[in-house]
Each structure stands twice: as structure tokens, then as C-alpha cells.
Length: 59
Image (cartoon, rainbow, N blue to C red):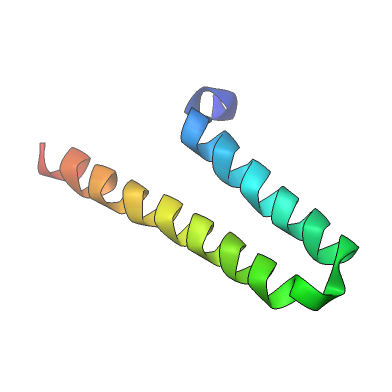
């Protein structure tokens, strides 16, 4: 049942976070930049989920 909830958007965010983690490990000079990139991606993902939850409750 949990696998049915995985969307393309979820996969993209997971790839973004894993990629940022790998790049942060590989290049320690840019760790804050990769951290910011991951934060923006996850924040955008959560921001898109909240209106959907609110819309489904209104219906």
C-alpha cells in the first residue's frame, strides 16, 4: 500500500537529496551549498503537498 503512494515527485526529491549528500561527501568545500539545495528541494516538495491535503479535506 505504501508503494502506491510513491509519485514521480517523491522520486525526484529522493534523488535530489541523495545526490546532494553524495556531492557533499565528495566535495567538502561546497557542503553548505549542497545542504541548501537539498533544503530547497524538500521544502518545495512539502509546500506542494500541503495544498493537496487541504483541498482533500475541503471536499
